[in-house]
Length: 185
Image 1 (cartoon, one colour):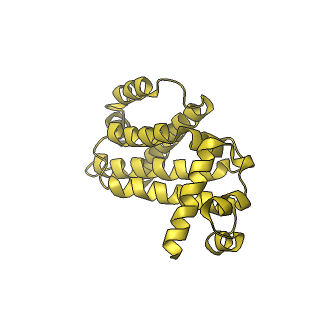
Image 2 (cartoon, helix red, strand yellow; image 1 turned 90 degrees about the vertical axis):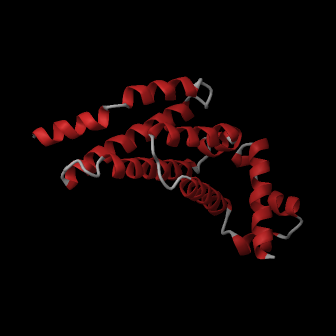
């Protein structure tokens, strides 16, 4: 029963979030739409931000588990862009709310996962020092995070696929070049 109720709360919340800004959604509305009382909501979640946190964390974990091996940056970026495009309105409502930090933590988690997973393959036989690996990994995590935030600032409107394709084309060879430069130090 608890899993069903929790799942229903999440589904109703996401539907409401697709219809209106986060600031216009209340626990009372969610409970009424679910056919439960407010105490049932509070049994599962402390408040709406904890509900958002749970949904965002589960979604990040789902994406990560579906792609345990990132064989290319292109694949990883496309997965995240596809999810964002499918859930555009809900994401924009969270991003434009006082709970933006939850979205940003989710985006960092995905960016770090993609870069670390890809980097583990790209740098496996590189002979790079631990500090050089860390610097390069942080650099790319920041690049992806910045790309995502910029897309959010543009309200997910631009033809992001064109940008992604161009970014990935320009990206090819850059990690290898960084390895060579790091070894020359």
